[in-house]
Image (cartoon, rainbow, N blue to C red):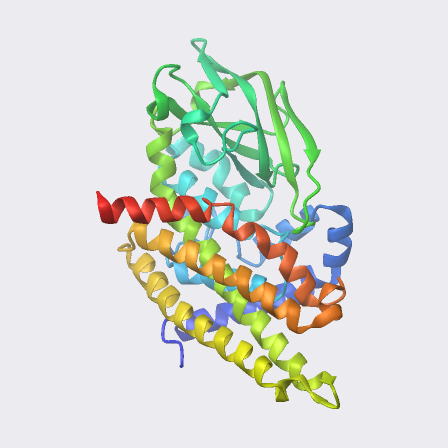
Length: 380
């Protein structure tokens, strides 16, 4: 079926993204994978190309459009290219809304121009060694000392943790407030007491720097409070739907791409004197995956349309996230199996897609939490 959600402007933007990937990313990506981190020059190149701060008003150097379809194009093209390290989705779609929606005018003028140019790389620090999806378990504290906050605690699994120049830290500002006692504080590179731990060794997404962060008596200026005091939980919940949509869009794109390359492979690869594609089992596998991808794509495109219009519910975003990511996981496993021994070799794209995509059902809220959100809405 022909997709109906994109205009000529979106397709022109897609061409720009592909050109950027061809010139600024793919020639260097193997080295980034070895290094465990991308080059800062790639972020600056993305800024020059207008790929950062799509929803930021033009007066601060951004693209001036809140049309989520542009972000969806980036997610689709980066996924098809097998590029996971340059986390534009994290920067644009997860962190961006906090800065544009919660920052004061002074904060916007201080941070947004560099955010859009690629000079300021961002991260958000929620997860702790003892608190993942359960935000009520956060132990990082920020004590009010009059003219500043004193921040203490640690975070882990923080994407962009090594490169980040600006980190939004979720901290407890009211000890007895539970989820309602959390606030968002912005910690900038070079602040005394802010230290980075290991660049964590993951099974996939090797070029995406993922780090431990430590805060030891960090003095955070009062003017670096983002949003309302003790309003962090509400702020986080408000922006989760877009984060989950970004993950879902990447997931269905990843599944479709794996299906494409596997379809080509089984047509070319022979077993028992004939192409694998001539075997009924293989045809059934391809048929099942193609149907599941087509049905999922129809739902995801509807969700993209709803989100662009501002009408997507948190429940529908959760449905999209858990279904698309679980589909990606299944398709990756089945496609690797159809590649046989070659599927286990890193030189084949299916192997990298298998390990890179495994995190999709975990970050942004696990599959189990997505089901809990959906179930509660139906049985409340």
